[in-house]
Each structure stands twice: as structure tokens, then as C-alpha cells.
Length: 83
Image 1 (cartoon, one colour):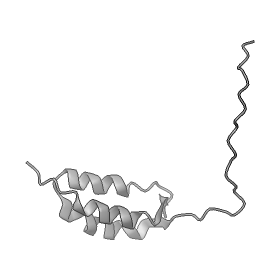
Image 2 (cartoon, helix red, strand yellow):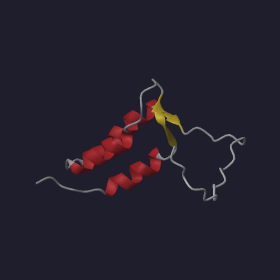
Image 3 (spheres, one colour):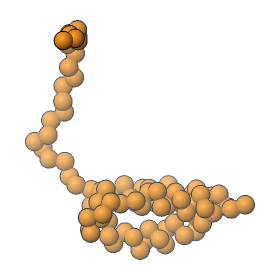
């Protein structure tokens, strides 16, 4: 039975939170899933070394623009009309 230790996952996710969903090569960042899979497979000691090697390819989280405004909820209750 594998050693199911998820302790490194919190540290890894805290580090990953600073990065966005894309890698420098245009692919998507699957680091959160890989870190969890390593813990689930009984390899918690491999999480941080793997993430250390993978981190160089991760892109910073994009900043949101000041032009974006939150959408106002549409509170109107109009009936749906069937044609």
C-alpha cells in the first residue's frame, strides 16, 4: 500500500498560485494535477523536486486590466416567450 501523504501538496499549491495556466511553450500548466498524482501514488517526497524543475517553464499569472469592470447582475424577471 502506498504512503498516502498529501502534506507537500499545500506547499506546492501555494507556490503554483503565483503562476498562470500557460507554459512558456504555449502548452497548459498541469502542475497542480501532477503534484496531487505524485502524492496519490505514494511519492510525496518527489513533489517539490519535480516542481522545482518544472517551475522554469511556468509563466507568471497575467494581471487583470483596470478596464475590466464587474458585470452588474440582471435582476429583471421577464417571462420567456415561446415562439
